[in-house]
Length: 159
Image 1: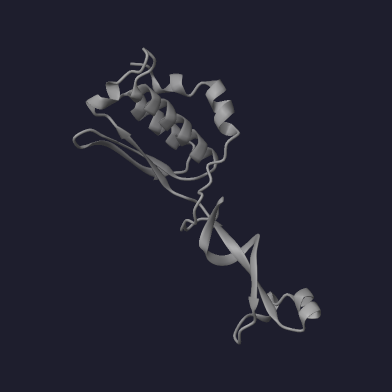
Image 2: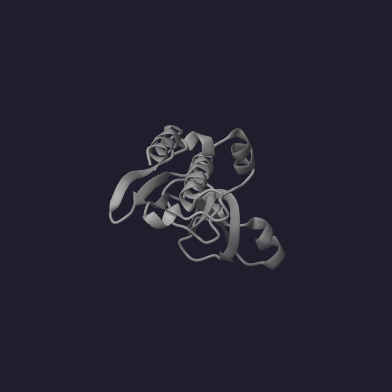
């Protein structure tokens, strides 16, 4: 069985490094990061204006909008968060299927898991790995440290 490092070749890394894995939906997270959050907060990403309400901080008033409209509006900003993810791999016998004598479904899943783990860690998003067949075989909790890629590749190479 090929080692997981075989799937994370330099040409794969170059291709994956150009991609951004951004959530296409709003996510909830606790750390500042790449993904939009449903929570408004302080950041550089402007979200919208809303009418001033009593109790709003005066420093948030957009005085340029006030000069144009003669009404008080407050700037709102979109907070950005990290997204935590698990890579879940099926290890059942169905993964031995091969189409046209190419790689098996299992081989493709190892390659994809290695590439996605690299991409998520490169973006500083925590990533974990779960492998299963009839029951869970391995479970690495999500981490965003660079050493996590080595941990994931070590598990993949032992499958």
